[in-house]
Structures are given as structure tokens and as C-alpha cells.
Image 1 (cartoon, helix red, strand yellow):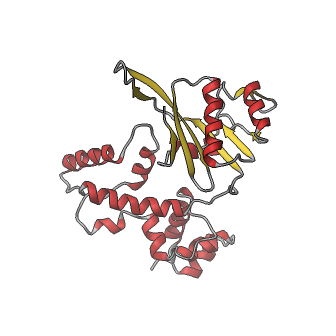
Image 2: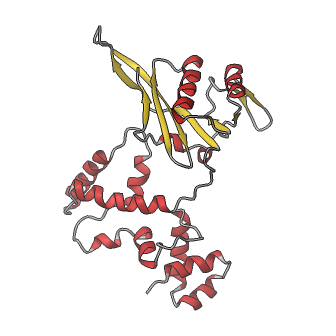
Image 3: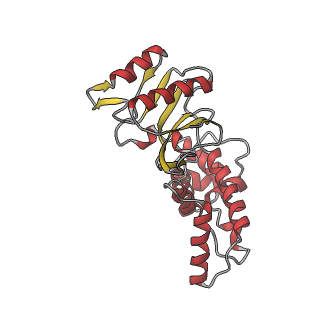
Length: 264
């Protein structure tokens, strides 16, 4: 029996691999594997009560629960990473999975089973994430990655639309709005509408390093766009742009839940 929880808790206390091996009765190789995999997947102490040995095993080694079915196992880590890319959907990934099964002469899971198993994995993955933000402290803002389109009712013309997204990291509550431009006026207007929707402003707003928000951002100097600075002063909020090339500073707004939206 692998004592997953005890291994992670002893490691967190600074106990050596030899000490953990002696205490749990598990091999040094298995202890090292569990610790490395937990660190890779962000499973850190203190652990929640529901994170039992069985829970941790299913999270670290989800393929084990699927092996007995005789079907092609799902690569949950790959699915999770691919879904973070623009325009990648679970439907597309299931199609790729089926093609891989045919090539390997394996039996695939149905789309419904594919969704069910991944949903369980994703729920466990989200349970390991630590919220480092206080309610009402920060709002993250950006333009969504993909361009949208609207249809002009009079001419039938297909017109490009750009989606502004704002998210409160602590609650994951979000607001999205489509605009016809990514200029400064649209940027400020979208912020105004966001604050109306949320019913107030946050202490800090974290934009990406766009020209509509930041004129210059280096390790020694930060110069905000004058109009954006005036807006921040009006709402009594502080602008703290994400550090350049530091994606971990800035990740929540790429998730666009179906909450509120001001349409065109």
C-alpha cells in the first residue's frame, strides 16, 4: 500500500527520503516518484481533508483507474495542456483520441465517457490550486486571444469584433464585452462597463502590457498610458501590469465563464 498523503506531509516537514522510506515502508523509488509528480501537478501541503490516499492516487495516476476497462487510457495531462491553447476543444481532442485508438487498434472511450473522466480529473486539478488573492483586491483584464465576428443586420456583412475580458481571480467571476475596435476609447469604455457590472472597482487592476494601458514597462521604469492613468485615478485603483514574459502573473482572464456581457 502506498501512503501518498503521509509521503507528501513528511516531505513538507523536511524529512529526508531515507526517513520517509523508513516511516512509510514504501520504496525510495516510489517515494521519489510521488513527490516529483505531486510537485509537477501542483499538489502541495497543507492537504485538504478529502485528499485521502485514494484521492491522491487517482489524481497523480488517473490512468490506473482506467486500465482495467480494456480501453485506450486517456492522457489527462496532455488534454489539460492542449485545452489551454486557442481554439482547442474537448470535441477536437476526442476526435484525435479516436484516431490514435484506430491507429493502435485500441478501443476508444465514447465522447460522453471521455468528458466524464476528464471532468473528474479537472475537478481534482482545480482542488489543488491555492487562491492567493483576497476578495475585491484584484481585477485582471485583457483582450481575448481569438477574434470574434458579428453580422450587420442591414447589410449582412461579417464584421470583426474584439472581446474584452475581466476576471476577479478569487471568485473567478468574469465579465466579457465585444467591441469593434481595440483602441483606447474601447478599452476605457469596457472598463467602465465592467465596474458597472461588478458594482464597484477593485484595489488593483492587472492589464497585459498593451499600448492602450502601458507606454513603457521595464524593471526600472513603468509609464502608463495617460488616459488609462486618469481612469485609474478616477476609480481610485492602482494599475499593476503583469511582468513582461511572466505568464504566471496573469492567467485568469483567459478563462471566459458565461456570466455577464454587454452586447453590441
